[in-house]
Amino acid sequence: MIRYEAIEHTADAGIRAYGSSLAGVFENCALGMMSLMIEAEGVEQRERVRIEAGGIDLEALLVAWLSEILFRVEAEGWAFGDFQVDEISDTSVSGSGIGERLDPEKHGVKMEIKAATYHMLEVGEKDGHWSAQVIFDV
Image (cartoon, rainbow, N blue to C red; front, top):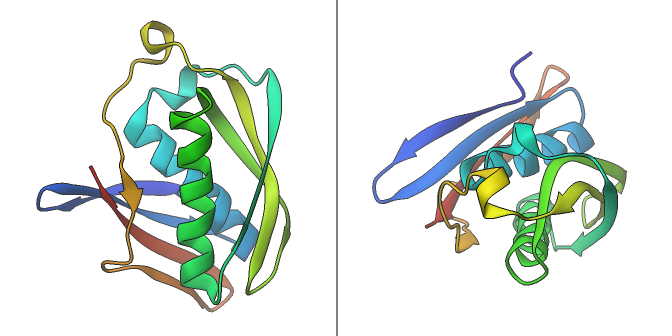
C-alpha cells in the first residue's frame, strides 16, 4: 500500500496519506510532510523525540500533531525519517519522531513549510482503510 503521495495545490503543497489504522495514517501524514521538507530517506534513526498533541476532533488533532512536528523541526532542529504513534484517540495523540539533528547539507532541504492548514483537510475511514489529506502553507 502507498503510504503517502504529494498532491498539487496552487501556491501551496499538500499530501494524501493512507494507513490501515488511524495511528498509521497519522504516522504517514507526518512522514509525507517531512518528505516535502527534506530528503527524509537519508535521515538516520538515531534518537526518539516525544511528540504529543490534542484537538477537539480528528481534523484538529491531525493539524496539532503536524504543527508540533513542525515546531520540533524549525525551533529545535530535528530531522525525522520515521514516526511511531503509541496512543491515539479522537482528541489526543502521543508518539515519537525518530531521527537525528537536521543537517541541511546531508538532508537536502527542499522547501519550508510554514503551517498545516484546515483548507481541504480530510481524515476518514472507509472499509477499514484510513486516509487523510492536508494542505500546507509554504
